[in-house]
Length: 354
Ligand code: RB5
Image 1 (spheres, rainbow, N blue to C red):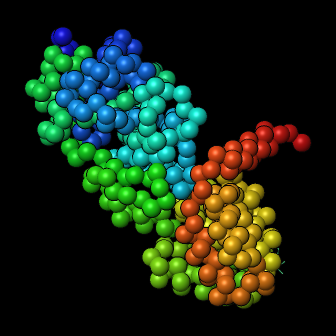
Image 2: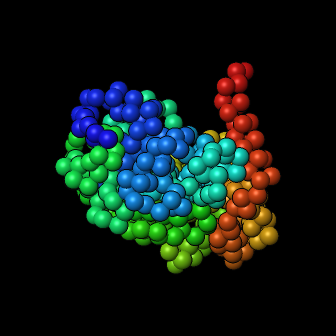
């Protein structure tokens, strides 16, 4: 097979090669990548032979949006925050496979790895192909990664269909993190430090009114001791304030991925929870005891916790906050279905005209 060298302007030819069961190489923000269509058994075999890679090791998916990830994976709130916070970028996340996925290549997999590079050219390519591609580094298995088209040609000429000329980014492959369980696990070191990813996933927005000011302060002290980073939206003393003024920006920061979690409080917790639940993507649970703190994470994958400062004492509020933050979502099918119906309700309401 002749390996053609193409320029980035020849996007149509790259698309054509991919659609004709081809293997193509192009520069990414880390190293040179090799891609094939996920539905092409012939291309996957060609890719595996070119790289001399074990057949049972699945390739990551190259995606351009969270919607493309959602079609293949079952995402929890924490997973969505990881995506908002770190993608696109030089990180690969492993998520749980969407159990309803009908795809031969991933039939035996329980997890799938996803990579979303920053390159606009790759985004355009994915838009043209209209589906994610399988992606791997453009080198023989076990050999150093390639950063230039010359290096790719030197090792893979005659084994792949085309190489798009250019220079890859930093030359260091992406950091790989297994996020398929609640505790993140480092699979491969890269430019992004695992500690930074963990630290960001331990960010908490705190807000209260005068009815729970001491509770917020106690929670702030304890969570800081435990290694959480707190963004404090107030209030900052016992003077009377209106709970929407502090709670809304805190909940908004969670919905935008700036903070991973939120804890909001007022005298009863009712006003705070109503406020937070008006923010898109927020599932705020009003909790009065440790048991329901655990259950709401398991069942509702709640992303904001509400408590009432006049109904729980400070010590209990701190314990509830800790339990809530440490409880994983169950990932049970029935709970996933119900949460997805909540999102449907939210979307219907967005388009509802009064
Ligand atoms: C403030 O007095 C009180 O209304 C507020 O803290 C909260 O309980 C509202 O739901």
